[in-house]
Length: 346
Image (cartoon, rainbow, N blue to C red):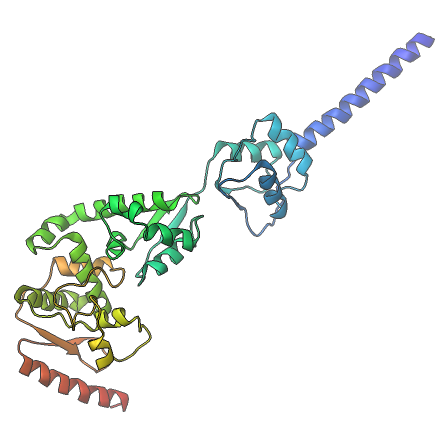
């Protein structure tokens, strides 16, 4: 009888120990740990992070609360490496340690969408891109201006803006500046291969970069897509006869006086290769990021004899065109009159 009690007691201890170990095992491995109601379920693990830094990141963001339990499962699954796998990962509420670690270990990133719009300077492009991917704007800008990085792509610092075609692009968050530029080069080539764009540029005796440079001027001249082909035709007419483009946006760019509302003699006389009032031909590179509409406006320019244009001055945002200087002067007088009437509310 005495031995029977001992055996039963031992069995009870084994059962209790099993229950304890089972509950601990369940809590560590299978109990949901990612809470409901977090503001952010995306985890961004920086490049070069250590295992401890990843743990601290998950703790700080509220993804996990049991750092020791997380480490136990992570070690069992051989998650730790030096450095840890970087990237942007979407986490699901209700996940347990096992699900969370398998997801992070598998490297199944959630992509980001880099949205490029009509930025003016490389600094602006770097700032915009840095909103979406891991490298900061300074790191991106250094790559944009690094000769050894951009020269193999066929660009200089002055012409690099022509690489960027406004659109939305899918990237992994931890994309490096070099990989970003390589991707932009592929997208650029894909764009120019479509719709006979390269062939159309060749017929104009222009390279794609030169087309883009002229398109950037057209972009800054008007917001009206309906007249971009006509404005492009004026500039191409001037280029054909060696006449200076005399484009106001180029002297604004040269002076970096982007807040001005009126182009003055100071702007027109400013000595810069970008100032087309001073120098003939196209500027050294684009004065802004061009829209696709402006690029295609140059490639499909309107054929006409216009050599001049000026704003209509009536609030429409449109322009008046002339073939001769005398006709242009009449349009300028009309512009001044329209502007006065528009400002006076008539």
